[in-house]
Length: 118
Image (cartoon, rainbow, N blue to C red; front, top):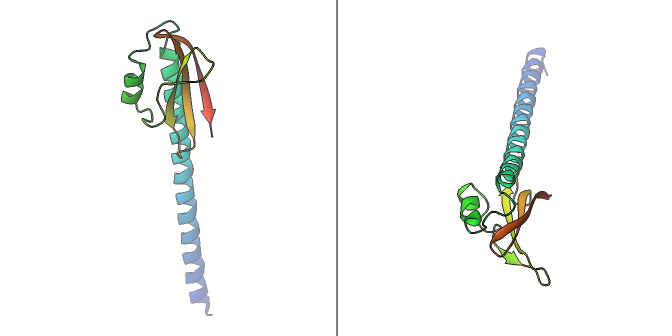
């Protein structure tokens, strides 16, 4: 190898390294944004739900704000008098879930909390 071809090889290697670093940096920025966005939406949604408020409009409101339609559904657990609604906002992947977990009884909210499932 001549000095000129070695220099070109080193320059090409440096460019490839910079490209990999930039792509990795963009990926990290996307992951951070996506997770922070989902977390913030779950926290904001929970904060806006008052204990004692009616449960009738919560599901439609959650879906309109971007909650996952497949995972945000009312359900009942045996031996628990409360109805459960996990309002799920998905992070970077489908298994990264930021949730405002709402419990209702007789058409009113009895509790709410933010949880994270990974």
